[in-house]
Each structure stands twice: as structure tokens, then as C-alpha cells.
Amino acid sequence: MQSESAHFPFFESTKEYIYIVKKKKILHFSINGFPGVGKTEILIGLLTSRLRVHFIPRYTTRERRPGEEDSPEYRFVSENEFAVLRKGGFFIKRTIRRVESEDGKFHFTAIIKKIFWPEPPEGTQLIVSFFGRSAFLIRRYTPEMKLVFISHHSIKSGLTEIKMRVAERCRRHGKKFYAKWRQINRWYQQEIWTKYDHVVYNDGTTPRKCVEEIIALAEREMSELSMAV
Image (cartoon, rainbow, N blue to C red; front, side):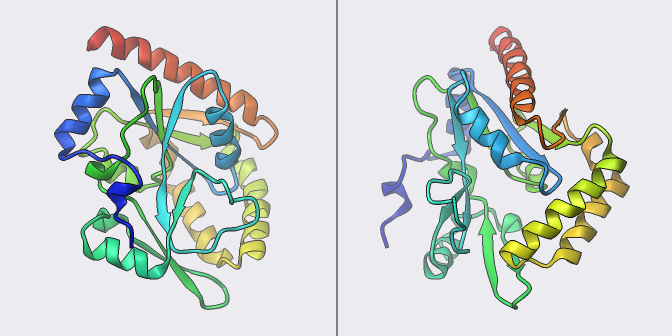
């Protein structure tokens, strides 16, 4: 198998990555949100926005879905490749997930260690990642990373719409609906959005507006970062 260093340059240490990011004054947003709230559309909007955005993908062994041929969200690898990378210590252990579908099949997902994050291209203004709840763990080693949660304006009334979207997505992709729905209700009970640095609202029909809000947040944070460095 081709080594990962052939895919992209990586840093020799976490300190080196932090030094590069701070030297270039690059902001990092890790975005999360309720399932079906439009994160993929928002990512596409950010990648085509006026900001120069660099995305850090997650790794997965699942098959590509229709429309994911050029998806920046994941780096798709075989089970054997995943096993080799896992054995070689490429992933953050606590981010490795085994996801089971309704038909009994399963796949793995994981986030690579920070020392293997691809170097931001010259001119990058914003680093974006979809680390999910693992972002809280990763921020212990990346304190400069800001956490952004995508939500509905009305969480309670929005749950009905979220439930419909999740049910359709689970039906389409063979996922277990009730396990996913339990997770959503758990987030709701915990008021998970209150643990994030920023909350941005998207009611399903306003992804462009949501993207503009994130850009405005990023520009404000970049201005503060510029003055601090």
C-alpha cells in the first residue's frame, strides 16, 4: 500500500503544526450539528465562498454513496488499508468508531492524528473539519480550534423535521434509525449546543445564509487572531 506521506505532506510534531498555523494566522473551525441539519451543503458553500478554506477529512471504510465521488468529507479506504493505518498508529484511538447498518454490515470511521494533518496550502484562511463529538477530545491538544454547532432556530419544533430527515437518510443508507434517534434525543436532553463556542442556525432552506454567518464569525475571529499573534 502506498504510504500516507505520499498522499500529502505531514508534520514531524504537533508543535510544528501549531507553529505553522499560528505563523500563518489560520483559524480552525470544527463544525458539528444534528443529523440532517445540512452540514454537507454548508461545507460545499464554505469551500466555494470568498474565503480560502482547507478541509481535514475523516477516514472511513464504507462504500461511497451516490454523489460522493468528489466528496471532501471522507478519505475512503479499504478495510485492509484501514487496519494497516490503525496498527501503525495513524488514528486517534478514541475516535475510531464501528458503525453498524440495518442489514448487519458495519464499517469503521476514524480521525487521523494531528501530526498527520495535511499542511494548509499557501493562502489558506480557514481550516474546517467535521470531527463530531471527538472535537472536544481533539481540542485538548488543539486549544486554538473553535467549535461551531449547526442547529434549528427552534430546537423543539425542529426535532420533528430532524426526525423525518434522519428516518429518510437511514432508510436510504441502511442505517439503524432508533440508535441514531436516541443519540439525537440525548443531545437534546444535554443541550449539547451550549457546549460549543458558536451556534449557527439552519432550518434546511437557508444553507447560504448559514454559510454567510459562519464566514462572518471566521472573519471576526481572524481579525482577533491577527491582533493577538
